[in-house]
Amino acid sequence: MKNYLKSLALISAFIMLSGGLFLYSGLYPMGADTPHNQLTYWLLETLRERSIARAASDLEIPNDLNSSDRLLAGGADYNDMCTGCHLKPGKTQSDFSIGLYPVPPNLTLTVDRHDPEHADSTGSDNETIKRQFWIIKHGIKASGMPAWGSGHDDERIWNMVAFIQQLPTLSPEQYQILSARRNNNGGHH
Image (spheres, rainbow, N blue to C red):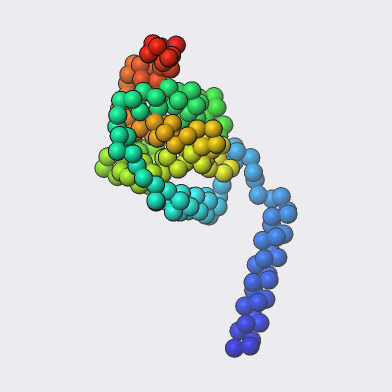
């Protein structure tokens, strides 16, 4: 048993030393134009998805998520804050989204097309809705996704989630109407 513990300690020390040397070597390519290797990608994806699932599991979805008021308010915010990365109907890329790694999901596509791992038959199950809210509110480290919660209350974020739920069904013309910012008199800017 004593030799087993000694061997385990030596192996652990070797792994930690090797990992430290690798970290300080600068050998890992950090450029956004060089994809991660499969192991790194899997580790980062698994860490991100498990963390989001745990953190979002207790969220309460508003009963009026499908209201037209939420859709209109969320559309204007989506247009102002999200289209540079996540696009809009009729657009397949932007100058900004081309250079990002990981590539941000194209939210104009159904969930099964932009995020197959989280797709269900409708793309609007409760887990997906909670996940979208959490990501918008808290952002994702080292991905370019900002945490909008520091400047936006939960109602405003739920409005964006409501809009994102409808986004894949919108034509470019419908998108233009629903995403126009309204002034205080109910008219368009």
